[in-house]
Length: 344
Ligand code: NAP
Ligand code: GDD
Image (cartoon, rainbow, N blue to C red; front, top):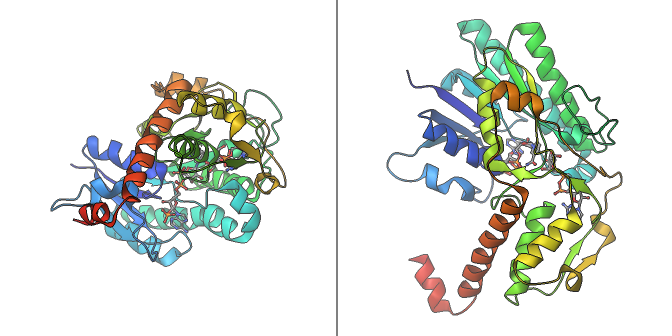
């Protein structure tokens, strides 16, 4: 029987890679999309167009409990991946209540819907929760692993801690097959443009082509453990294939600074970042997470998960992709004739 999966956050970076992975494995893939005045489906266009789309989209929102319950009853998924969230740490300081409602309570709403359907039908639904290394915040040990205590440093981090523990609680209380992936930062050419890696690669490419003069950043000394999103979604899927649900850290176990990311990105284009990067205090956070370094030994051993893309390859992939994008944009900005051709 064909397995059915529902992905919340399917229009996001991870949602798009996970949808591709599940389609390639033969799943019937359903995705939750929220209503917006624009399409917002750029990352999954190739999966939703044509006579036989690979991914079926449904309107819904993590703030709407009854809509979520209806959708779960309608689709009767075997696996649910909860990737939807207000996922920007800096924005969570400006929108703390909204972040709590969507990222924390939204997870509870979804779990409640699953619990009801599982109770009624007796069919087990496997659940993946997108937990985050941001929960470790002001880290109490390094590297961080599954047993490291949380010390969140942002409304986003606090919301993710709630979502994490409510998932664990539903696993222990209602026998749900619910797993949390504590994922460290993962990036790709599809990364949102306001996260630091993509902001850097996008700007470096535009500067190279003379389309931009400067790049304004905040804390260049922050240290992160960056991996490739395409590798990380494989770990999500592997977690739901295990006989028993559990929680896993997913990371590269490598530390790099934002400054180093700048150096490598500009260097790839033959530029020195010192000539273009300026500090703007607006991009500093009220409370910063200085260092995140993950120990993914448990996931590598129990899941057999192995990342394929190195840090250096990730930077190069992102820079090359953004250079292509900038070239296309420069072409488009040319004459109205070229715009007409694009429209056709
Ligand atoms: P992303 O690109 O920001 O995608 C977030 C997704 O959530 C988008 O599809 C977004 O829809 C959707 N969404 C936002 N608010 C929603 C709401 N109220 N109802 C329904 N959908 C909503 O994030 P990502 O990088 O793919 O990350 C996926 C998940 O992993 C997130 O939960 C994130 O917090 C978590 N995570 C990410 C990382 C990382 O480094 N990328 C690390 C650890 C954990 P729109 O397209 O309409 O905005
Ligand atoms: N966004 C941003 N913009 N960050 C900057 C900038 C800037 O101009 N300048 C410096 N930084 C620093 C931030 O202060 C932070 O220390 C680091 O770069 C990474 O910032 P982000 O790329 O925004 O990622 P994040 O680590 O805060 O959050 C991401 O990773 C989490 C996992 O640890 C997000 O994807 C979260 O959703 C995810 O949970």
